[in-house]
Image (cartoon, rainbow, N blue to C red; front, side):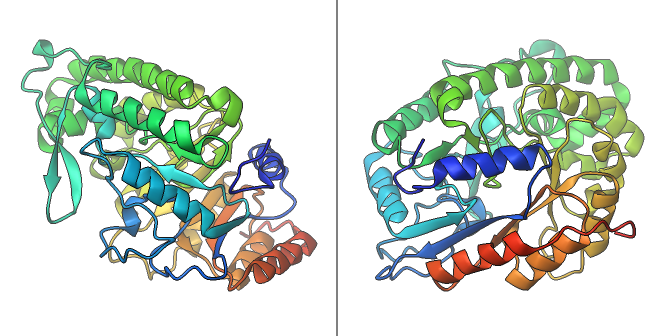
Length: 382
C-alpha cells in the first residue's frame, strides 16, 4: 500500500505495528523536511491543520498548511487545494504520515451531542455553549442529523474524493467521558452534580459512552479505517482504529473521583480502540498517573506541560511512566536528535515516539540510520 506523499507508507505501517506490540528496534520519529524550493518556513510539525500551529498570519506561500478550524463555512475546495500543495512541498520521513486534522473546535464531540459551538476571539477557537439545565430533561445521544456531524461528514467526503491515496484524514478527537459532560453542562455545575447527584452523572456517562461507540464506528466507516488504518492528532498511526482519549477535567478531581467516574469510561473507550494513546494535560493531572498506567490497554501517555510549563524539566515524569511500564509520546514538542538518542538508551519502553527536525532529507535519513545502530540497554533505575 502506498500514499502519494509517502511512498514508503507500507514500510512505516510495519514499523507502527511493531511499535504497538512493544517490538520496535529503534525510537519512532516524525521528520518533515521541505523539498528544495519550498519557501514557507512557518509552524509545521507533523500534520496540517493542528490547533497549536495557529493562529498565525497566513503568508500565502506555497507549502503553508491549512489553518485550524478551516471550512466552518462549508467552502471545502480552497482548503483541499492548499492541503494538496502542502503535501507536495514536503518529504515525510521516518514514521511521519502525511495527514490533515479536521476539527471545528476542541468540543466537536460535544457538538455531535447537540451543543452549539461559539468562537472565542481570545483563544482563537470554537467552544461549546453548555445547554444541560437538568439531567432528567436531556437525552444525550449522537445526533447524526445535527449540523456539526453533517458538516464533518461532508468535509470528510470532499477530502477523500481528492486526497485518498495521497494522505490520511484525522477526524475530530473523541473528547468523551467527563470532558464531554463538562462541555455540555459547564465544569462548575458538573463538579457540584458529581457530589450531589452522582447517580445522574453515572447515567450521563453511560450515555456518552454509547455515543462514543456510534461516533467511532461512523469515523471508521467514513474514513475506511479497515483499509487505510487511522491517524490521530498526535500523529500516531495504527492499521486499526484509534483516537486520543483525554480527561482534562481530571485536574479538578480527586483520585477517588477519578476511579469512580473517569476510569470506567476510559476502560470502555480503550476496548473500542486498537491502540490507546492518552493525552495527559498539565501538571494538575499528574496525581492520576498511577491509575492510568494501571490500565492494561493503555499503550502510551502523551504529556502536554501546558502554558508556562514548557521549559521545565519533565524527565522525572517520563522516568515514572517508564517504570510503570508504559510508553511516552514526545511528539507535541520537537526534540533534538541528541535527546532522542539519549531517551532511547535511558528508558526501558520500546514505545517511544518523537517529532524532530532535519535540514535535509539526507540528514534525516542519516539520523534514522544512526538510530538503527543504537542498542537498547535495560535500565532498572529509570
